[in-house]
Structure formats: C-alpha cells, structure tokens
Length: 173
Ligand SMILES: [Zn+2]
Ligand SMILES: [Zn+2]
Ligand SMILES: [Zn+2]
Image (tube, rainbow, N blue to C red; front, side):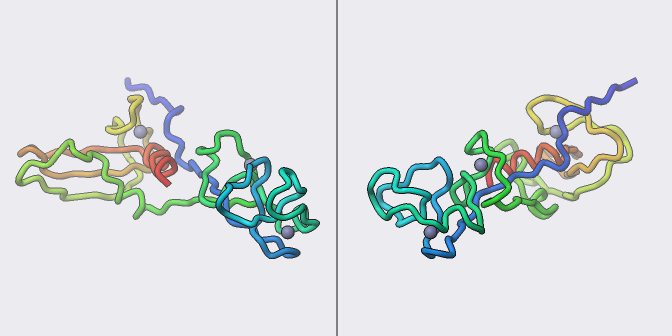
C-alpha cells in the first residue's frame, strides 16, 4: 500500500507583493515603512524628517491609503519577514501560467520530441510528483499538471503537483 505524504503540495500558495501607495496630502509615493530612501530616486512621502534629506515628514503618511514595508513589486518572500496586507496586492496565478512553466528546461531536446498533452487535471489515481526536489506522491483528487509526449523516442507521461508550480511561480514573480 502506498502512503501519501501531504506536507509538500501547497495547493493554494499565495504571494503578496508591494504596490505603490500615493499620499493624498503631498501626492508623492509613500516610502515603505522601515526602508531607507534610495539616494537617486524620490521624493517620497515619509513620516518624519529622518535623515534631514529630501523633504520633511508629511502628515499624510499615516493616513489612508496606508503603506506597508514592501517596495512596489517586491514580494513578501523576497523581503523575508513581511506579513503586511496594507500596501500589497495578492499575486495570483492562472492555469495558463502554470502550464507555461518550462518544467524540463534543457533536459530534453532530441529531434522528434513532441508534447502531445499538457493540461491541469484533478487526479483520480495516485501519481508520483515528477518535479519537486523533495520526492513526494500526489494524492488522489489533487490538481496536477500532466504532460505526455514523445521524448528521446519514448512515450512518457509525467505528473507535477500544482503546489510545486505555484512555488516556482512565486519565486520567479
Ligand atoms: Zn505625503
Ligand atoms: Zn510588511
Ligand atoms: Zn510536487
């Protein structure tokens, strides 16, 4: 009897990234909390005149819309210890995004290689995830990407857990 490990697939892995937040008082973008102002950009709206450079503190900084600690486009994963909801947006991925990840970059490439099927399915039988570094099973009823084709003259089918692809997309967002 196969046993199914459930710790790996994080099916609904979600990343948040910073967005630019404009101050309604001074109209400048708000400096993310706890971050220092880059020398060559700005001016930024800031809470107080920390370094005596640029502009003085703005009363609008603490008003809505609030800013978090991430730079625009920076992910919580990149920064490491951010749990802000303000000043961020959720990064979501579609199945088209998941299907367009090149899973086996460089591993294949013989003349005659052909992808015959590339789809996201809900599994009805147990499969081994063919991609994650840590080897694991994909439980029945999970979403997985299935790719079938001819590689090196052999017909092959591989299953990859959606959680693993989500993590990849987050890391490369
Ligand atoms: Zn301001
Ligand atoms: Zn934060
Ligand atoms: Zn996996």
